[in-house]
Image (cartoon, rainbow, N blue to C red; front, side, top):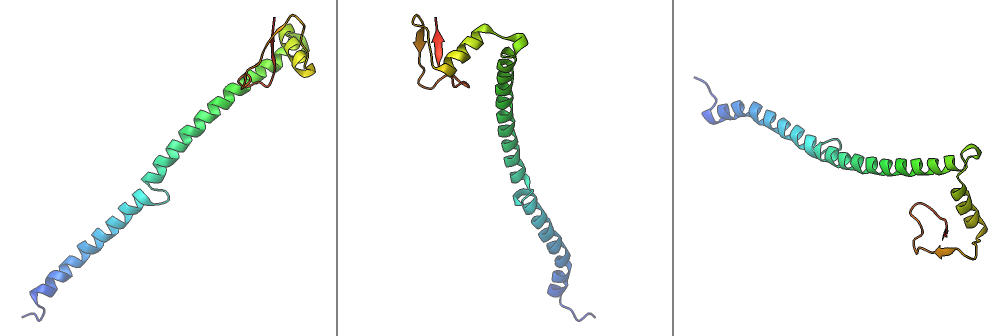
Length: 116
């Protein structure tokens, strides 16, 4: 006859599943909540989308500025752009010009508008 009671025998049989369950809960918790878990991954994906949007805006602004620079090169000089820049830099206008001031200025430009 064995000297162990059925209760102690049942506890001995339950130790391994309890330890395995505890380890599973630990890993599942940290795969969701940890520094590199699912919640951190999802927030990082949102941040990546925001940064990509900012990158696209900056790329568009750069293309616009590159077009303006190309238009001001001596081989491709745009007379209208040259006139606009000269008037803005010298703060001058022709007496027949109609000047329109925008309270916010032009988007992306810090120039004064002078139209005929």
